[in-house]
Image (cartoon, rainbow, N blue to C red):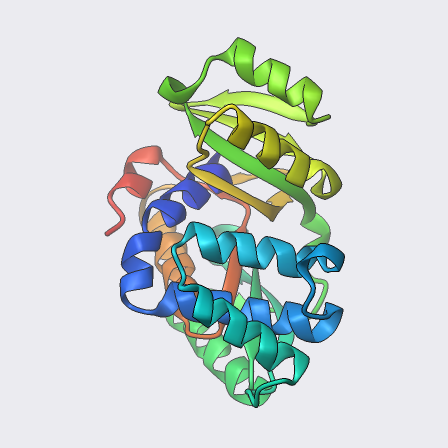
Length: 248
């Protein structure tokens, strides 16, 4: 969990750069479109769409972009026919990796992901090869100076959160996916802004890697994150914190 939560926090800090390159907004638009297509365009009755819209607003996506994405999903506007895919594989050191994809060409994506894994010393596996190592949880990371352990413990109890840990200079709050909206709402009420907050896949256990293997793992994780069809990347690595901080 340590490596995963720090990796998530660093990805969040890089979000502004991603947005400038258009990648973050592109991913959000795909998620909004898919959510609207599967559950309708009303955020009140579509939890997935509500979360996607909240995330987009937090990233300062223009309201017009959000509206158009919803209408493309509901069919009110023409749009690309996307499909969701999940790929599983291994990084060097036996690290398990899961990549959630939204694509308009599954064959192209499969081929390109296989090349990315191979180039970085890993390999793509079969469906189900590593998913059993992960479970879905809501996770929020909060910098120590933004709150106290006592305050966060009280929030955890009010939100029925499952765990509160201090991980380096971050508090990590974990909840069930069902209770995560409540946790985020209470944090907002207290004016506590998480560094990272999302429903994610957490590994049951982490695998420590160092040196060259750690470099290869991080290079693969970055390459998968940069791939245009990627929505999320999950892994069970734990690498030295100084290596994470050196990421561009």
